[in-house]
Length: 191
Image (cartoon, rainbow, N blue to C red; front, side, top):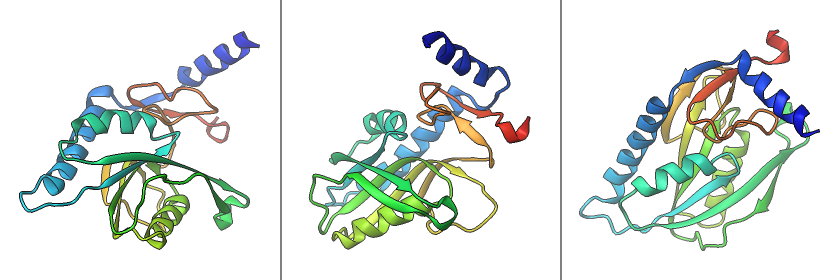
């Protein structure tokens, strides 16, 4: 069984195309950190934002971004999943809610990808309903899907084409979150 998974995972990369290498990915994360640092390190800033990583896809992005942030912050994480009819948005289920108090605070949500946008739109509204004064969506990848989304990222690392992308936290069938760059995987429909 282990050989099957190993071979299947390797096969995914055999026909994959590298879209962005490690250097490009690292530079994008640094640009995002610079944007956040410019706001929260401002001389008149008294904000103590809450940073929420969306698990599990954002774990690599979050781990690379946090050490580059130079302002006081509190870190926590959330875990949400979508179930049901994907075309209708499905039902968003919160597996882990913030343990930290969000009332009256600026909340920075870190996620790996803004795809259709239904889940992140729900997350943003729920945090505002919980009393957050502002929710900033910082998304490493914004997928160009060719149609309007229910929410827009405030800070974007890289805009990617409408393809199945793995690496830097994003997976294909559970594989390759650990790639340092971004790769487009050939799907069955593209064969």
